[in-house]
Image (cartoon, rainbow, N blue to C red; front, side, top):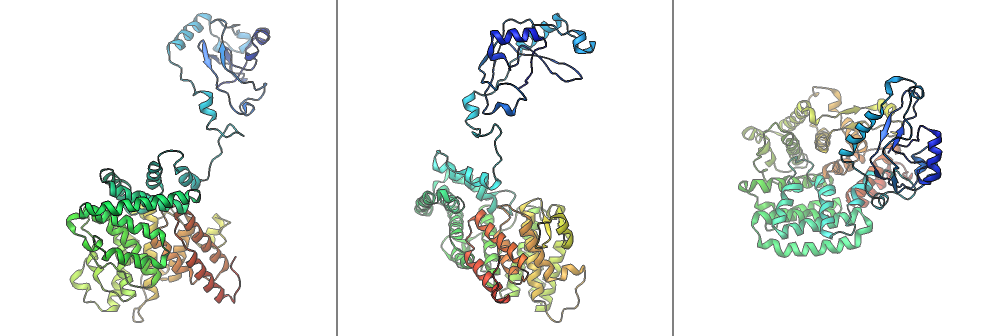
Length: 526
């Protein structure tokens, strides 16, 4: 909208007397009052002006009246700007040219703004410019039902707030796309998805907690009654949603129990077959992530002893890079906590690695982890890696002195966190007979890897980044932190996890605070 006034003062005053509503509006001919040039602006015979809540924000002067329809007396300008008034002959326009342009303007359609009621209904009452909401409020509270069908609101929440977290290591988005499309044809599977979405939304949007909990129970009962009538492949997918339902309902110390129950139950991952790889593969990796996180928290070997389904993608893809480091962590946990070596089958070297002694196995795993880190593709490397004192210079509020590590995708972030926790565990169980490790010294420091895990957690703030493995890794390295500023930063992140994901970490936070107080002679943690 252009705000201006007429060129001729006499005609302008006459218009004010005959048409008061035109005192501050744009007449048929408008002039831009810049000192360098004057441009002639034209409107067709009828223009609808939209009122705003506070017009004074949009105009420097004027009464700020509310406008409706502007009626023009005729198509001829009140006065023709002269060369003397414009200051140069370059901007002079004859009457014939003006009528030609006016005719061309009438021949083109004019797109008008929506009606006043439609526009002002979406504007805050105190300003014509909407105030930007907090990103987390947009991602969660705006996904509520808002008077629509409850299932629509739940599906919206699942697609935008929950599925990206589940699919963090799967660019093909099996849970956010494939399983959702399958659910459109299989109602019991859709009910399982809705039950999970309702439960998780009740944890992150307290205003809907009571209604969402009731919906979750209703949809879960519907899914439990209908899934046994479906094929085995569909049942296994539905059971994964049931496991995720239990995952959000329990604290991390109980994750091992629910994974074990899911593996051993009828139709669980114990029934996986390579022939059903398209549906089984996403289920396998999601369950493995929770299993590995539970192993880190409980200091136990993984429960899953099955080989992953045969992948369909190229081994050099980002997805395969992510899956490879997951398998390295899986066998690292089995090695460190005394489990079987089944996971080595997924890493190759089957005939030789099984016969290795503990020192050779440790060396093999350490070498593989270091090779992964040094050969990771550019997409998995951080776009920002600032360490030590330089981090304080970039971010003065970074009192904890954790490194600043920023990645382009949640997949890259989680993959690097998996690498750091695997290396941290290996260094804490380094055999005495292993000689000095080659390569950069920082890679051989458990403190460096612990700082990296904390830096990844504190430098980023998205829902997708809070993979169960990163949560478990942060809880693991936090036990050895002694500086109160670092402890406060970790507590802030743990509380943020609950806000964003709904995962209850109250017990873990209380345990950490108890350990820290013992090491600081009962000094309270800020």
